Image (cartoon, helix red, strand yellow):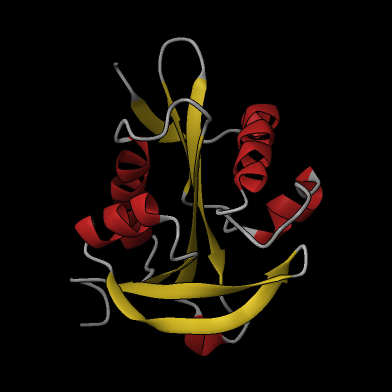
Length: 164
């Protein structure tokens, strides 16, 4: 499979939205229960570091960064979102997206990346750790989906060149 990771364009939103919906449906990707509108998604993510993975025919996954705070002191801290399409998981697409997202974050002066991952999402935890993320801790029973309390594993990666 020949996969390219490239910048997301606004026109990619319908495919990104569908992949986001597929992730929500797994129950192990996010606390979200509905895909946000384009306007809400667009305003909640950095304008930089929006990526898609695609082959010659379709978009296979996407990744983006969200600011963790509006406070200037945290301007270089961002939260990672990565979603891979149904049937494409387990083919290295998530890791390829994360590798490219890390490179983009470095170019955009992000010094800390953080990820909140359900512990049951072992593939995501594994490729984050393979990309230099470390486990910070577990936020126990931090939120609920459909009346079920969920833990979130908090991982982070510090830039090796920015803010060191």
